[in-house]
Amino acid sequence: MGHLATTLDWIVLFVYTAFTLGVGLYMGRASNQPEEYVVAGHRIPTWAVGLSIFGTYVSSISFLALPGKAFASNWNVFVFSLAIPLATWVAAKYFVPFYRRLGAISSYEHLEHRFGSWARFYAMSCYLLTQQARIGTILYLTAIAIAPITGGDIKILIILSGAIVIAYTYLGGIKAVIWTDVLQSVVLIGGALICLALMIFQVPGGLPNVIKTGMATNKLALGSWEWDFSQPTVWVVFLYGLFINLQNFGIDQSYVQRYQTAATEKSAVKSVWLGALMYIPISGVFLLLGTCLYVFYLHHPEKVPPGGFPTPDAAFPHFILSCLPPGISGLVIAAIFAAAQSTISGSINSSATLIAWDIYKRLITPNANQNQMMRVLRIASAGVGIGGTLFALGMINIKGALDVWWELASLFSGGMLGLFLLGLISRANTNSAALAGTLTSILTIAWITLSEKIPWKGQLIALKSPFHTFMGIVVGTLVLMLVGILLSGLSKSPTPNNLH
Image (cartoon, rainbow, N blue to C red; front, side, top):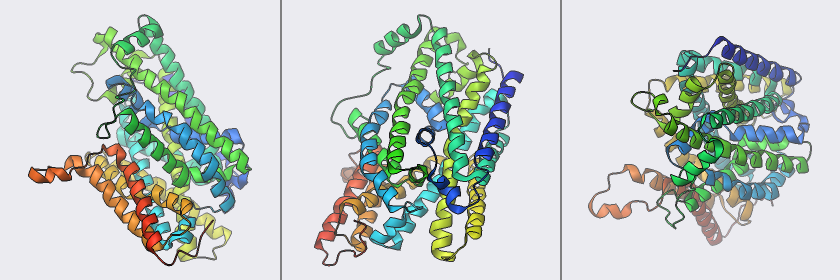
Protein backbone atom coordinates (compact mmCIF):
# COMPACT_ATOMS: atom_id res chain seq x y z
CA MET A 1 0.00 0.00 0.00
CA GLY A 2 0.98 3.62 -0.15
CA HIS A 3 2.56 5.93 2.32
CA LEU A 4 2.15 9.56 3.20
CA ALA A 5 5.15 11.83 2.81
CA THR A 6 7.91 10.58 5.11
CA THR A 7 10.38 12.58 7.17
CA LEU A 8 12.88 12.27 4.33
CA ASP A 9 10.30 13.60 1.84
CA TRP A 10 9.64 16.60 4.09
CA ILE A 11 13.37 17.26 4.38
CA VAL A 12 13.68 17.25 0.58
CA LEU A 13 10.72 19.63 0.31
CA PHE A 14 12.11 21.92 3.01
CA VAL A 15 15.56 22.07 1.39
CA TYR A 16 14.00 22.80 -2.02
CA THR A 17 11.75 25.54 -0.58
CA ALA A 18 14.56 27.17 1.41
CA PHE A 19 16.92 27.06 -1.56
CA THR A 20 14.27 28.54 -3.87
CA LEU A 21 13.63 31.41 -1.47
CA GLY A 22 17.36 31.94 -1.04
CA VAL A 23 18.04 32.05 -4.78
CA GLY A 24 15.11 34.39 -5.39
CA LEU A 25 16.04 36.82 -2.63
CA TYR A 26 19.77 36.79 -3.43
CA MET A 27 19.44 37.25 -7.19
CA GLY A 28 16.81 39.96 -6.78
CA ARG A 29 18.53 41.87 -3.97
CA ALA A 30 19.45 44.85 -6.18
CA SER A 31 16.03 45.19 -7.85
CA ASN A 32 15.17 48.59 -6.39
CA GLN A 33 14.66 50.52 -9.63
CA PRO A 34 11.48 50.15 -11.75
CA GLU A 35 13.16 48.96 -14.95
CA GLU A 36 15.48 46.69 -12.98
CA TYR A 37 12.42 45.22 -11.30
CA VAL A 38 10.62 44.46 -14.58
CA VAL A 39 13.36 43.89 -17.21
CA ALA A 40 16.45 43.23 -15.03
CA GLY A 41 18.52 45.91 -16.75
CA HIS A 42 18.60 43.84 -19.98
CA ARG A 43 21.42 41.73 -18.50
CA ILE A 44 20.04 38.20 -18.12
CA PRO A 45 22.06 35.50 -20.00
CA THR A 46 20.47 33.80 -22.99
CA TRP A 47 20.35 30.35 -21.40
CA ALA A 48 18.66 31.68 -18.24
CA VAL A 49 15.96 33.51 -20.22
CA GLY A 50 15.43 30.34 -22.26
CA LEU A 51 14.98 28.20 -19.16
CA SER A 52 12.58 30.81 -17.77
CA ILE A 53 10.48 30.68 -20.95
CA PHE A 54 10.49 26.88 -20.69
CA GLY A 55 9.41 27.14 -17.05
CA THR A 56 6.53 29.38 -18.09
CA TYR A 57 5.39 26.70 -20.56
CA VAL A 58 5.31 23.97 -17.91
CA SER A 59 2.84 24.47 -15.09
CA SER A 60 1.77 21.92 -12.50
CA ILE A 61 -1.34 21.47 -14.66
CA SER A 62 0.92 20.15 -17.44
CA PHE A 63 2.88 18.03 -14.96
CA LEU A 64 -0.30 16.31 -13.78
CA ALA A 65 -2.70 16.58 -16.74
CA LEU A 66 -0.42 15.33 -19.54
CA PRO A 67 0.23 11.96 -17.86
CA GLY A 68 -3.51 11.78 -17.16
CA LYS A 69 -4.32 12.38 -20.84
CA ALA A 70 -1.94 9.67 -22.06
CA PHE A 71 -3.12 7.28 -19.33
CA ALA A 72 -6.77 7.70 -20.35
CA SER A 73 -6.46 7.97 -24.13
CA ASN A 74 -3.43 8.57 -26.36
CA TRP A 75 -0.79 11.12 -27.42
CA ASN A 76 -3.23 13.43 -29.22
CA VAL A 77 -2.14 16.41 -27.09
CA PHE A 78 1.47 15.95 -28.26
CA VAL A 79 0.39 17.46 -31.58
CA PHE A 80 0.14 20.75 -29.64
CA SER A 81 3.90 20.48 -29.03
CA LEU A 82 4.55 19.71 -32.70
CA ALA A 83 3.07 23.11 -33.60
CA ILE A 84 5.62 24.92 -31.42
CA PRO A 85 8.52 25.11 -33.96
CA LEU A 86 6.40 26.95 -36.53
CA ALA A 87 5.05 29.38 -33.93
CA THR A 88 8.58 29.89 -32.59
CA TRP A 89 9.89 30.67 -36.07
CA VAL A 90 7.21 33.36 -36.50
CA ALA A 91 8.01 34.76 -33.05
CA ALA A 92 11.77 34.78 -33.65
CA LYS A 93 11.47 36.42 -37.06
CA TYR A 94 8.73 38.97 -36.36
CA PHE A 95 7.49 39.24 -32.76
CA VAL A 96 10.78 39.43 -30.83
CA PRO A 97 12.40 42.00 -33.18
CA PHE A 98 9.18 44.06 -33.09
CA TYR A 99 9.11 44.28 -29.30
CA ARG A 100 12.87 44.76 -28.90
CA ARG A 101 12.91 47.68 -31.34
CA LEU A 102 9.77 49.15 -29.79
CA GLY A 103 11.38 49.03 -26.35
CA ALA A 104 8.09 49.42 -24.48
CA ILE A 105 7.63 47.83 -21.05
CA SER A 106 3.94 47.09 -21.64
CA SER A 107 3.17 44.67 -24.46
CA TYR A 108 -0.12 46.52 -25.06
CA GLU A 109 1.16 50.09 -25.36
CA HIS A 110 1.51 49.80 -29.13
CA LEU A 111 -2.16 48.78 -29.43
CA GLU A 112 -3.11 52.24 -28.20
CA HIS A 113 -0.97 53.85 -30.91
CA ARG A 114 -2.53 51.64 -33.55
CA PHE A 115 -6.17 51.51 -32.56
CA GLY A 116 -6.79 53.86 -29.65
CA SER A 117 -6.86 53.55 -25.87
CA TRP A 118 -9.76 51.06 -25.90
CA ALA A 119 -7.50 48.41 -27.51
CA ARG A 120 -4.78 48.81 -24.89
CA PHE A 121 -7.17 48.60 -21.96
CA TYR A 122 -9.19 45.76 -23.48
CA ALA A 123 -6.06 43.62 -23.88
CA MET A 124 -4.65 44.64 -20.51
CA SER A 125 -7.91 43.92 -18.67
CA CYS A 126 -8.27 40.51 -20.32
CA TYR A 127 -4.71 39.64 -19.38
CA LEU A 128 -5.06 40.69 -15.74
CA LEU A 129 -8.30 38.76 -15.29
CA THR A 130 -7.02 35.59 -16.92
CA GLN A 131 -3.79 35.70 -14.89
CA GLN A 132 -5.77 35.91 -11.66
CA ALA A 133 -7.70 32.83 -12.74
CA ARG A 134 -4.49 31.13 -13.84
CA ILE A 135 -2.75 31.72 -10.50
CA GLY A 136 -5.80 30.51 -8.59
CA THR A 137 -6.28 27.47 -10.81
CA ILE A 138 -2.66 26.33 -10.53
CA LEU A 139 -2.55 26.83 -6.75
CA TYR A 140 -5.83 24.96 -6.32
CA LEU A 141 -5.07 22.01 -8.61
CA THR A 142 -1.56 21.65 -7.19
CA ALA A 143 -2.93 21.54 -3.64
CA ILE A 144 -5.62 19.03 -4.67
CA ALA A 145 -2.96 16.73 -6.16
CA ILE A 146 -0.44 17.11 -3.34
CA ALA A 147 -2.82 16.92 -0.35
CA PRO A 148 -3.34 13.11 -0.48
CA ILE A 149 0.42 12.58 -0.76
CA THR A 150 1.48 14.90 2.05
CA GLY A 151 -1.58 14.50 4.24
CA GLY A 152 -1.73 18.29 4.40
CA ASP A 153 -4.82 20.48 4.51
CA ILE A 154 -5.71 21.93 1.11
CA LYS A 155 -6.20 25.45 2.46
CA ILE A 156 -2.83 25.44 4.23
CA LEU A 157 -1.07 24.10 1.12
CA ILE A 158 -2.62 26.84 -1.02
CA ILE A 159 -1.66 29.59 1.43
CA LEU A 160 1.90 28.32 1.94
CA SER A 161 2.50 27.85 -1.80
CA GLY A 162 1.13 31.30 -2.56
CA ALA A 163 3.11 32.97 0.24
CA ILE A 164 6.44 31.51 -0.92
CA VAL A 165 6.01 32.72 -4.50
CA ILE A 166 4.69 36.12 -3.40
CA ALA A 167 7.69 36.60 -1.10
CA TYR A 168 10.49 36.24 -3.65
CA THR A 169 8.52 37.85 -6.49
CA TYR A 170 7.60 40.86 -4.30
CA LEU A 171 11.19 41.46 -3.18
CA GLY A 172 13.18 40.46 -6.25
CA GLY A 173 11.07 41.27 -9.30
CA ILE A 174 11.76 39.71 -12.69
CA LYS A 175 15.36 38.86 -11.81
CA ALA A 176 14.19 36.70 -8.91
CA VAL A 177 11.50 35.21 -11.15
CA ILE A 178 13.96 34.20 -13.87
CA TRP A 179 16.66 32.76 -11.61
CA THR A 180 14.17 30.76 -9.56
CA ASP A 181 12.69 29.60 -12.89
CA VAL A 182 16.14 28.23 -13.75
CA LEU A 183 16.27 26.26 -10.49
CA GLN A 184 12.66 25.13 -10.82
CA SER A 185 13.18 24.01 -14.43
CA VAL A 186 16.09 21.81 -13.37
CA VAL A 187 14.04 20.33 -10.50
CA LEU A 188 10.95 19.61 -12.59
CA ILE A 189 12.97 18.04 -15.42
CA GLY A 190 14.96 15.96 -12.94
CA GLY A 191 11.84 14.90 -11.06
CA ALA A 192 10.05 13.85 -14.25
CA LEU A 193 13.04 11.87 -15.59
CA ILE A 194 13.70 10.08 -12.29
CA CYS A 195 10.03 9.21 -11.95
CA LEU A 196 9.96 7.90 -15.54
CA ALA A 197 13.06 5.75 -14.96
CA LEU A 198 11.63 4.23 -11.78
CA MET A 199 8.28 3.62 -13.45
CA ILE A 200 9.87 1.84 -16.44
CA PHE A 201 11.94 -0.25 -14.00
CA GLN A 202 8.75 -1.47 -12.31
CA VAL A 203 6.99 -2.40 -15.57
CA PRO A 204 7.55 -6.04 -16.61
CA GLY A 205 9.58 -6.00 -19.82
CA GLY A 206 10.64 -2.40 -19.35
CA LEU A 207 10.44 0.24 -22.09
CA PRO A 208 10.13 -2.25 -25.00
CA ASN A 209 6.99 -3.67 -23.38
CA VAL A 210 5.61 -0.17 -22.79
CA ILE A 211 6.08 0.66 -26.48
CA LYS A 212 4.73 -2.72 -27.64
CA THR A 213 1.64 -2.46 -25.44
CA GLY A 214 1.16 1.20 -26.30
CA MET A 215 1.26 0.44 -30.03
CA ALA A 216 -1.11 -2.52 -29.68
CA THR A 217 -3.68 -0.49 -27.73
CA ASN A 218 -3.29 2.75 -29.76
CA LYS A 219 -2.03 4.51 -26.63
CA LEU A 220 0.80 6.09 -28.66
CA ALA A 221 -1.45 7.30 -31.50
CA LEU A 222 -1.58 11.02 -32.28
CA GLY A 223 -5.30 10.89 -33.05
CA SER A 224 -7.40 10.83 -36.19
CA TRP A 225 -5.94 12.22 -39.44
CA GLU A 226 -9.37 12.85 -40.96
CA TRP A 227 -10.21 16.34 -42.23
CA ASP A 228 -12.87 16.76 -39.57
CA PHE A 229 -12.87 20.08 -37.70
CA SER A 230 -15.64 19.04 -35.32
CA GLN A 231 -13.37 16.58 -33.49
CA PRO A 232 -9.90 16.95 -31.90
CA THR A 233 -8.18 15.49 -34.95
CA VAL A 234 -4.47 15.95 -35.60
CA TRP A 235 -5.25 18.98 -37.79
CA VAL A 236 -7.49 20.63 -35.20
CA VAL A 237 -5.00 20.18 -32.35
CA PHE A 238 -2.14 21.40 -34.58
CA LEU A 239 -4.03 24.57 -35.52
CA TYR A 240 -5.03 25.10 -31.90
CA GLY A 241 -1.42 24.67 -30.77
CA LEU A 242 -0.16 27.02 -33.47
CA PHE A 243 -2.56 29.83 -32.59
CA ILE A 244 -2.23 29.42 -28.81
CA ASN A 245 1.55 29.55 -29.11
CA LEU A 246 1.36 32.57 -31.40
CA GLN A 247 -0.81 34.22 -28.75
CA ASN A 248 1.71 33.38 -26.04
CA PHE A 249 4.66 34.70 -28.03
CA GLY A 250 2.85 37.67 -29.52
CA ILE A 251 0.61 39.18 -26.85
CA ASP A 252 1.43 37.56 -23.48
CA GLN A 253 3.07 40.15 -21.19
CA SER A 254 5.00 37.44 -19.34
CA TYR A 255 6.77 36.34 -22.53
CA VAL A 256 7.27 39.87 -23.87
CA GLN A 257 8.93 40.95 -20.62
CA ARG A 258 11.38 38.10 -20.92
CA TYR A 259 12.34 39.27 -24.42
CA GLN A 260 13.35 42.59 -22.87
CA THR A 261 15.50 41.03 -20.13
CA ALA A 262 18.00 39.64 -22.65
CA ALA A 263 21.07 41.73 -23.50
CA THR A 264 20.44 41.93 -27.25
CA GLU A 265 17.78 41.11 -29.82
CA LYS A 266 19.88 38.16 -31.02
CA SER A 267 20.10 36.85 -27.46
CA ALA A 268 16.34 37.20 -27.02
CA VAL A 269 15.70 35.24 -30.23
CA LYS A 270 18.02 32.44 -29.09
CA SER A 271 16.32 32.27 -25.70
CA VAL A 272 12.90 31.89 -27.35
CA TRP A 273 14.15 28.98 -29.44
CA LEU A 274 15.81 27.37 -26.41
CA GLY A 275 12.77 27.61 -24.15
CA ALA A 276 10.25 26.55 -26.77
CA LEU A 277 12.22 23.60 -28.15
CA MET A 278 12.99 22.30 -24.66
CA TYR A 279 9.28 21.90 -24.03
CA ILE A 280 8.76 19.45 -26.91
CA PRO A 281 10.81 16.51 -25.55
CA ILE A 282 9.75 17.23 -21.95
CA SER A 283 6.07 17.15 -22.92
CA GLY A 284 6.88 13.79 -24.54
CA VAL A 285 8.33 12.64 -21.21
CA PHE A 286 5.12 13.64 -19.41
CA LEU A 287 3.03 11.72 -21.95
CA LEU A 288 5.33 8.70 -21.76
CA LEU A 289 4.75 8.77 -18.00
CA GLY A 290 1.04 8.39 -18.72
CA THR A 291 1.58 5.49 -21.12
CA CYS A 292 3.84 3.80 -18.58
CA LEU A 293 1.16 4.29 -15.93
CA TYR A 294 -1.35 2.50 -18.16
CA VAL A 295 0.98 -0.46 -18.75
CA PHE A 296 2.04 -0.53 -15.08
CA TYR A 297 -1.52 -0.75 -13.77
CA LEU A 298 -2.36 -3.24 -16.53
CA HIS A 299 0.27 -5.56 -15.06
CA HIS A 300 -0.45 -4.60 -11.43
CA PRO A 301 -4.25 -4.32 -11.13
CA GLU A 302 -3.95 -4.96 -7.40
CA LYS A 303 -2.38 -1.50 -7.04
CA VAL A 304 -5.43 0.25 -8.49
CA PRO A 305 -7.48 1.73 -5.62
CA PRO A 306 -10.90 0.16 -4.88
CA GLY A 307 -13.43 1.64 -7.27
CA GLY A 308 -10.71 2.79 -9.66
CA PHE A 309 -9.42 6.32 -10.15
CA PRO A 310 -11.95 9.16 -9.77
CA THR A 311 -10.32 10.92 -12.74
CA PRO A 312 -7.39 10.01 -15.04
CA ASP A 313 -5.39 12.87 -13.48
CA ALA A 314 -5.45 10.98 -10.15
CA ALA A 315 -3.38 8.07 -11.51
CA PHE A 316 -0.01 9.83 -11.36
CA PRO A 317 -0.36 11.20 -7.79
CA HIS A 318 -1.50 7.72 -6.69
CA PHE A 319 1.65 6.22 -8.21
CA ILE A 320 3.80 8.79 -6.40
CA LEU A 321 2.03 7.94 -3.16
CA SER A 322 2.07 4.16 -3.45
CA CYS A 323 5.04 3.14 -5.59
CA LEU A 324 7.93 5.59 -5.14
CA PRO A 325 10.47 5.19 -2.33
CA PRO A 326 10.79 7.85 0.40
CA GLY A 327 12.95 10.79 -0.67
CA ILE A 328 12.13 10.26 -4.33
CA SER A 329 8.50 11.05 -3.53
CA GLY A 330 9.71 14.29 -1.97
CA LEU A 331 11.69 15.15 -5.09
CA VAL A 332 8.70 14.55 -7.36
CA ILE A 333 6.46 16.61 -5.05
CA ALA A 334 9.09 19.37 -5.20
CA ALA A 335 9.03 19.08 -9.01
CA ILE A 336 5.26 19.58 -9.05
CA PHE A 337 5.63 22.62 -6.79
CA ALA A 338 8.44 23.90 -9.03
CA ALA A 339 6.22 23.64 -12.11
CA ALA A 340 3.52 25.62 -10.29
CA GLN A 341 5.82 28.29 -8.88
CA SER A 342 7.60 29.04 -12.17
CA THR A 343 4.28 29.86 -13.84
CA ILE A 344 2.75 31.75 -10.90
CA SER A 345 5.76 34.00 -10.32
CA GLY A 346 5.75 35.10 -13.96
CA SER A 347 2.02 35.83 -13.80
CA ILE A 348 2.45 37.94 -10.65
CA ASN A 349 5.36 40.00 -11.98
CA SER A 350 3.87 40.59 -15.43
CA SER A 351 0.50 41.57 -13.96
CA ALA A 352 2.15 44.00 -11.53
CA THR A 353 4.07 45.52 -14.44
CA LEU A 354 0.86 46.20 -16.36
CA ILE A 355 -0.82 47.70 -13.28
CA ALA A 356 2.14 50.05 -12.80
CA TRP A 357 2.57 51.08 -16.46
CA ASP A 358 -0.88 50.75 -18.04
CA ILE A 359 -2.97 51.93 -15.09
CA TYR A 360 -0.91 53.93 -12.59
CA LYS A 361 1.51 55.72 -14.94
CA ARG A 362 -0.89 55.96 -17.89
CA LEU A 363 -4.02 57.09 -16.02
CA ILE A 364 -3.20 58.23 -12.49
CA THR A 365 0.32 59.71 -12.24
CA PRO A 366 1.94 60.17 -15.69
CA ASN A 367 5.02 61.83 -14.16
CA ALA A 368 5.51 59.25 -11.42
CA ASN A 369 9.06 59.09 -10.06
CA GLN A 370 11.04 55.92 -9.47
CA ASN A 371 10.12 55.62 -5.80
CA GLN A 372 6.43 55.90 -6.61
CA MET A 373 6.70 53.30 -9.38
CA MET A 374 8.58 50.88 -7.12
CA ARG A 375 5.95 51.29 -4.42
CA VAL A 376 3.17 50.53 -6.91
CA LEU A 377 5.06 47.56 -8.40
CA ARG A 378 5.55 45.95 -5.00
CA ILE A 379 2.01 46.66 -3.79
CA ALA A 380 0.64 45.31 -7.08
CA SER A 381 2.83 42.18 -6.82
CA ALA A 382 1.51 41.46 -3.35
CA GLY A 383 -2.06 42.29 -4.38
CA VAL A 384 -2.02 40.06 -7.47
CA GLY A 385 -0.50 37.18 -5.50
CA ILE A 386 -2.98 37.53 -2.65
CA GLY A 387 -5.85 37.84 -5.13
CA GLY A 388 -4.81 34.64 -6.89
CA THR A 389 -4.49 32.85 -3.55
CA LEU A 390 -7.97 33.97 -2.51
CA PHE A 391 -9.27 32.83 -5.90
CA ALA A 392 -7.78 29.38 -5.21
CA LEU A 393 -9.32 29.25 -1.73
CA GLY A 394 -12.70 30.23 -3.17
CA MET A 395 -12.56 27.38 -5.67
CA ILE A 396 -12.59 24.83 -2.84
CA ASN A 397 -16.32 25.36 -2.32
CA ILE A 398 -17.31 26.48 -5.84
CA LYS A 399 -16.42 23.48 -7.95
CA GLY A 400 -18.35 24.44 -11.07
CA ALA A 401 -16.94 27.95 -11.25
CA LEU A 402 -13.64 26.80 -12.78
CA ASP A 403 -14.96 25.66 -16.15
CA VAL A 404 -17.33 28.63 -16.42
CA TRP A 405 -14.56 31.11 -15.64
CA TRP A 406 -12.10 29.68 -18.15
CA GLU A 407 -14.76 29.65 -20.84
CA LEU A 408 -15.59 33.30 -20.19
CA ALA A 409 -11.90 34.21 -20.10
CA SER A 410 -11.31 32.48 -23.43
CA LEU A 411 -14.18 34.39 -25.01
CA PHE A 412 -12.67 37.77 -24.29
CA SER A 413 -8.97 36.99 -24.59
CA GLY A 414 -9.54 35.20 -27.89
CA GLY A 415 -9.60 38.50 -29.76
CA MET A 416 -6.19 39.60 -28.45
CA LEU A 417 -4.09 37.66 -30.97
CA GLY A 418 -6.14 38.83 -33.94
CA LEU A 419 -5.91 42.44 -32.78
CA PHE A 420 -2.13 42.18 -32.44
CA LEU A 421 -1.71 40.55 -35.86
CA LEU A 422 -4.04 43.08 -37.47
CA GLY A 423 -1.82 45.87 -36.17
CA LEU A 424 1.28 44.19 -37.57
CA ILE A 425 0.15 43.26 -41.08
CA SER A 426 -2.40 45.96 -41.96
CA ARG A 427 -0.90 49.36 -42.78
CA ALA A 428 -4.23 51.03 -43.45
CA ASN A 429 -6.68 50.48 -40.63
CA THR A 430 -9.16 52.38 -38.53
CA ASN A 431 -10.05 52.23 -34.87
CA SER A 432 -13.67 51.45 -35.71
CA ALA A 433 -12.67 48.59 -38.03
CA ALA A 434 -10.47 47.04 -35.33
CA LEU A 435 -13.24 47.43 -32.74
CA ALA A 436 -15.80 45.86 -35.08
CA GLY A 437 -13.41 43.00 -35.78
CA THR A 438 -12.81 42.44 -32.06
CA LEU A 439 -16.53 42.35 -31.24
CA THR A 440 -17.18 39.99 -34.16
CA SER A 441 -14.34 37.77 -32.98
CA ILE A 442 -15.74 37.60 -29.43
CA LEU A 443 -19.17 36.63 -30.77
CA THR A 444 -17.63 34.00 -33.07
CA ILE A 445 -15.61 32.44 -30.26
CA ALA A 446 -18.67 32.50 -28.00
CA TRP A 447 -20.70 30.71 -30.68
CA ILE A 448 -18.05 28.00 -31.13
CA THR A 449 -17.32 27.61 -27.41
CA LEU A 450 -20.90 27.55 -26.14
CA SER A 451 -22.56 25.63 -29.00
CA GLU A 452 -22.08 22.28 -27.28
CA LYS A 453 -23.84 23.56 -24.16
CA ILE A 454 -26.93 24.93 -25.90
CA PRO A 455 -29.83 22.44 -26.31
CA TRP A 456 -30.47 23.11 -30.00
CA LYS A 457 -33.87 21.78 -31.12
CA GLY A 458 -35.75 21.51 -34.39
CA GLN A 459 -34.63 23.84 -37.14
CA LEU A 460 -32.39 25.75 -34.72
CA ILE A 461 -29.94 22.86 -34.78
CA ALA A 462 -28.68 24.31 -38.07
CA LEU A 463 -27.23 27.18 -36.02
CA LYS A 464 -24.98 24.86 -34.03
CA SER A 465 -21.26 25.38 -34.64
CA PRO A 466 -19.64 22.76 -36.88
CA PHE A 467 -16.29 23.33 -35.15
CA HIS A 468 -14.63 21.72 -32.15
CA THR A 469 -14.06 24.18 -29.30
CA PHE A 470 -10.30 24.11 -30.01
CA MET A 471 -11.10 25.93 -33.25
CA GLY A 472 -12.47 28.93 -31.35
CA ILE A 473 -9.21 30.87 -31.23
CA VAL A 474 -8.37 29.86 -34.82
CA VAL A 475 -11.65 30.96 -36.40
CA GLY A 476 -12.01 33.94 -34.05
CA THR A 477 -8.56 35.27 -34.94
CA LEU A 478 -9.11 34.87 -38.68
CA VAL A 479 -12.55 36.50 -38.47
CA LEU A 480 -11.14 39.50 -36.58
CA MET A 481 -8.40 40.04 -39.14
CA LEU A 482 -10.75 39.60 -42.10
CA VAL A 483 -13.36 42.01 -40.73
CA GLY A 484 -10.69 44.53 -39.73
CA ILE A 485 -8.98 44.49 -43.12
CA LEU A 486 -12.24 44.63 -45.11
CA LEU A 487 -13.70 47.50 -43.09
CA SER A 488 -10.39 49.37 -43.17
CA GLY A 489 -10.39 49.07 -46.94
CA LEU A 490 -13.84 50.67 -47.07
CA SER A 491 -12.76 53.54 -44.82
CA LYS A 492 -11.40 56.74 -46.28
CA SER A 493 -9.22 57.70 -43.32
CA PRO A 494 -6.60 55.22 -42.07
CA THR A 495 -5.30 55.51 -38.54
CA PRO A 496 -2.50 58.11 -38.49
CA ASN A 497 -0.54 56.51 -35.65
CA ASN A 498 1.19 53.65 -37.48
CA LEU A 499 4.13 51.83 -35.96
CA HIS A 500 5.39 50.68 -39.33
